[in-house]
Figure 1 (cartoon, helix red, strand yellow):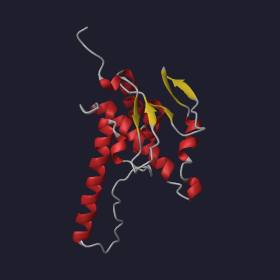
Figure 2: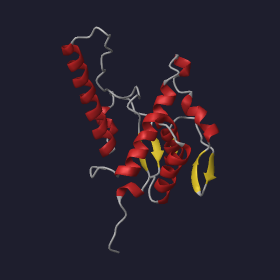
Figure 3: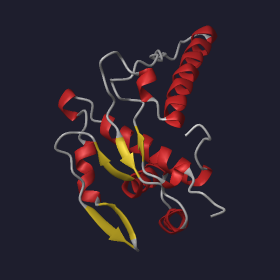
Length: 176
């Protein structure tokens, strides 16, 4: 066989940078009166945080950025490629999907399971593509609500869905 299977054609794990198991630098919140030096410092920390997380995503080595003794929540994902990318791109255009809607649809198409006890996704087939039922997403959207953080679950879906879509259209890093 001349062509081997690229790594992106196998299931893989993703995690959210928002996971409290990660020991990533905290970007300071700036007020409207922040100085140029404060802004520059915050941007530097944000870049450091983004780089550390991106390396972990690309290599699949999340333990390198974990707090001692903690494991991140991992999402088992299937690659979105070939006809699925074409279909998803068509849905974006037909339905004029905004970024949060695109991320949710990519999340539904790409995520197979998550290692949170008790969370099990129901699936459906839409136009020949297996995906998580929209009604099952409440389990993820509710993450953080008990702690008063109603934005955490949607932010996780947006981040993971965005990573899935990015891998679908750009491919994966050679480090993967």
